[in-house]
Amino acid sequence: MNRHCILFNDNQLNSRRASGAYRVANLLKRLGWTVDVIDWTKSWPEHKLYEYLDNIVNDNTVMFGFSYTWMKPEWTQNFIVNLKQRYPGRKFIAGGQQFYQYDIGCDAMLYGYSEMVIEHVLEWFFDNAPAPKGTRPLGLGGGLLIDCNSTYPAMGLEEYSVQYTPKDYVQSNEQLTIEISRGCKFACKYCNYAFLGIKEDTSTCEQSLRNELMENYNKWGVINYVIADDTLNDRETKLEMLARVVESLPFEPNFSAFVRIDLVISKPQQMEMLSRARVWAHFYGVETFHPAAGKAVGKGMHPDRIKQGLMDMRKHMIDTLGLYRGTLGMIAGLPHETPDSWQKSEDWLLANWNDQCWFWWPLEISTNTNTNTLTTSVFSREWEKHGYREIKNNDRINNIENKFRKTKTNVQHKFDNNSLMWAADWADINDAVEFCSQFQTPTNFHKTEKRLSNFIILGYNQEYSDNKVLELNEYDIRNDSKDLIHNYIINKLSL
Image (cartoon, rainbow, N blue to C red; front, side, top):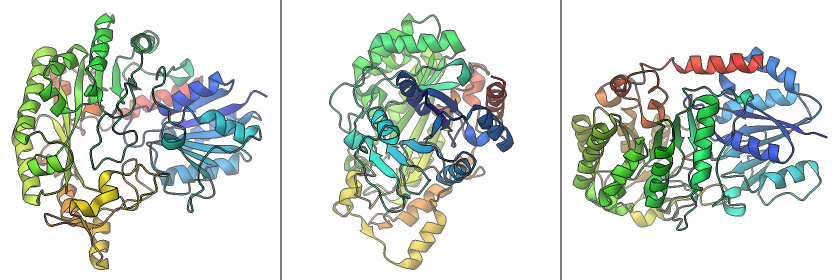
């Protein structure tokens, strides 16, 4: 029997095509399966989606899969209910980096990188093999939850490349995702991500990286990429390899990536490496400009050096490439930092960074220490040692939750439903929520127009001149993704 699987893919936060479904599709094909990937699933007109499914679902279609990292749980749950009614008797599987906190109706849920467990799941589903290692937590409907990062770690693979086919209808103005390595060399105390403090180099080989970029350019005309690495510049050998690859290409690619600005400041040669590699769209997890708060989370460089480094980076990129987008992530609520300090940081950004982008988030501390379902940060394990106390007044808790509600309608790949209602000598979560909320509405965001973030801007540098693309804000382009998705759907229906 030639088994057939349909994988549903969607990034329900922005229009960028996520790569996880295609990585799984590549693996299934190597195992002899036939696979169809349906992207931007939520954006399809419902009747067109089911018309397409009716044409491709057959007796060999034994499994539906969901690339869950960027999907909203409520939508996923409802869609799976409809699929089960329309196409009974199939297996359902989900995988990705989002925490599984609701019963979405899957037989198996894979948390983390899943390459090393997929074959075991298929043998269990269809060949009477034992179930892979996992748990069946209450509230997840009896499905098997597999923490791939703990029990089937997929680190240091020979390559991380993804291959697309004509049936995927990749468009030239898309930003595709690539991986160069996995894991993070650092271990910030607030971070809940997997594979922290990784010492070994897990980078792909140079030729594999070049082959992937050339294939996507020759077949689809793609030149724009998001690099998924947790920290791109943790190793200079990786930066140098990327720069060599870029300099060998017959076209000029553009990259967006997570970059530690304090490393660039400590190792200024990295600035030139980044520009040689055309990595000009950066996200910096700065978190704070408060000296004591920075030290408390493992970022000890003085804020004045950070601020100067940001401006130096901007100048270097503009002078060298004529292109730059720096996006800062800031956290309200870190140890020792008061709301007055948060406001001072905002004032500095407004005065000195207003042509770039930044976001504020309240500090969230999870009380869930079950590492089978969640990679827990130092703060989550030891919050009392860091000066946090639990708010127990129900009226205060209800007031905070009404302002900062996390529901099944939201993508939650950073935070879970077990947030500590914290208070400390310097602030409490209510202060942090109120401060951050003022920047989430269109009329108040930075008290100005929001510049495109580094993870969005690359989708437009082929459509606008360099100067114009740097001036774009999110309201200039809010309807543009409709053309990309509409073209994709029309072409999928015609194939």
